[in-house]
Length: 434
Image (cartoon, rainbow, N blue to C red; front, top):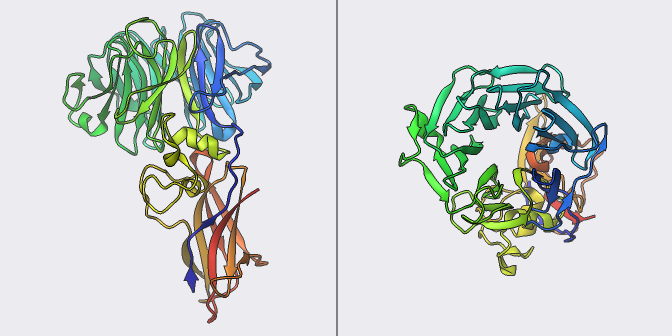
């Protein structure tokens, strides 16, 4: 039996779906735009809640469930809506006053929402449907927790201190609490890349964005002056909410403009490189941008290009037929298979395998990953008895298993029920424009 790599045919269209969501505290609006800052619109609400609120704070996107969550300090509530603004509801109130809901972050594994309450100095959680609200960490920070992130797979919470400048970590239930870093000049957006081993955060009034290897905390607390702490960007204005896009190698942040006139990006949404290699891009202006999150799904090639390439990238780099990382996959194939255009990848697009019946008969199976969010594509397996004359595989007992992944991707396994024979067959993955 012989195996051929993927062949790909797709159209390039320009309809936006995924992108950047952010709260503008100054105007009381939730905004949405393309990854490169184009197509900026206001998300209008339709449902039980008709206004986002009067003092917007943290925002979190749950693309898998087509919903977003945000905090309104004006009413001391958490709210939820579809990504298009529909079915908006009040999720959680804060009875008794003396509350300050700030940042919100989802735990996708357990379908829960965590948030900081600065004035009550607690981290709390609730189910995505608003039930089972409970305190998780009390006395979370001396001046109150303000921004947080959730490592669902590793079972950890990370959060910052509003005025004290420290960053903390605990288990998801609040146990095993640690102080990781001290000495920030007001800690803001806190993001963890657990798989890559990095912690990222914004140092608000020092006007910097930092990162540090998670391994640096193995021996205990470190100061901001530790050699392990990298400064990715400095000379900013007031970096605030922060989100990272690890596959694209990008980080996005909101700049409230509170230190107006003192640096780059005031009153804007900006993005830069995860390693700080290139100058930040200022994507869009607002009144007082406060927090930012991403819907990383890409339904058209143009969206994918805007996510993975800077605005100053050349046409030679971003052309669908280009291969800027030299790994043999053109950009259009990277888009179709959910791989990365600026990082060389050597695994095959279509991976063959075997499965065996209890009686010993052996059958072929195939594995591949695809961008299921791409609604301009159609995937199929093709077969031939020679390396030409291809036709779609239409076996009557074909079994397909699909496992959803993050960001609109999925793993696909196709099993053939017909046992292997002595006649060679050729197989390939085909991707066509719809």
